[in-house]
Length: 87
Image (cartoon, rainbow, N blue to C red; front, side):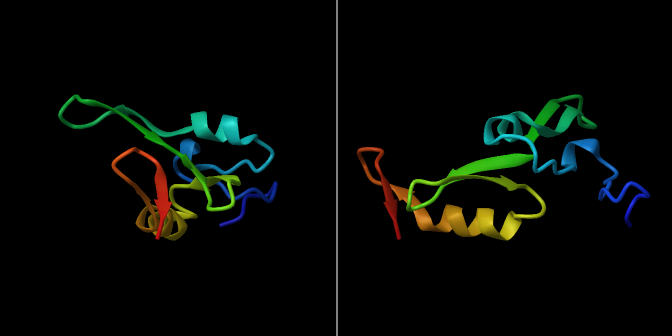
């Protein structure tokens, strides 16, 4: 549903996407910052910053870009030296 000011609002303010933010600001945004039913405090990032094969960094939203996050994880592997190897 679109709000009268034409922003897509979510039930969770941490899930909101503000494309005017820098990658660094998005990397710090939390989708969840609260205790769960067991009392354990959970912090879940709203964005995951990934670096592609070309070295370009992108901030991927944990909901909107979930498929791309999964694809990136499947592609990126590290060797025994800790160097990234793309498959």
